[in-house]
Image 1 (cartoon, rainbow, N blue to C red):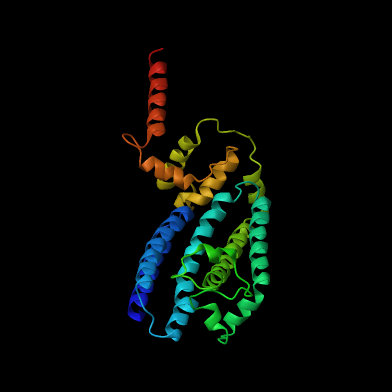
Image 2 (image 1 turned 120 degrees about the horizontal axis):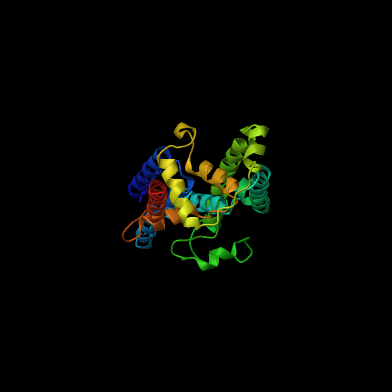
Length: 282
């Protein structure tokens, strides 16, 4: 088992590192990471379902350390995607409140599971046989209801909670970094972004604006290319008084179109050419 899990972890980490280094779009990164981790997790589950642990210590090590380390990454990237989909593109203050509320939610989870957190982080092991071995749990233990919905061959009483704790530790770092980015913008810039001089509302289809959004980002039309799709989307949403929603999913749908994948851009070219032709003919 040790060789299998070690190779799996190394492969996952290498793939995740490539995504982080090569991609700027948070939705793309999160989606790709989730796909990688879900595939790896399915392989791991299949392997463990047919594997017989050598002894109690090997089973405990898997459910206390190996599985939570992998599962925490899957929970983390799923949550990143969820956070960014629901994150407001309005004022900087609104975004800060949203991110701080997420931090408060995580703080509440830590407080509710403080004893387990202390047990895990201080290296205790006297309850490992109850927490991290498969079998019917002691009904007196403080369990998540989620436990009873999972595969008993691939789950123990507390491996999910440990994974959740580890993912929350990573999320705290992510949320604080996002808050620091918002704080780093000068007040004058925040006001300029939040209150455009002329308020224009985009009334065409959202998909059509997303089509332009990705074309602008690809062509590096703003700040000499020194921006990313998320920053550009937030600015466009504010300037045009619209919520683009899950624009990465919209982009995926564009890529899967039959025939032309740039319908709106081609329509704009036709409209502009027709306008110039009409003026030429006057």
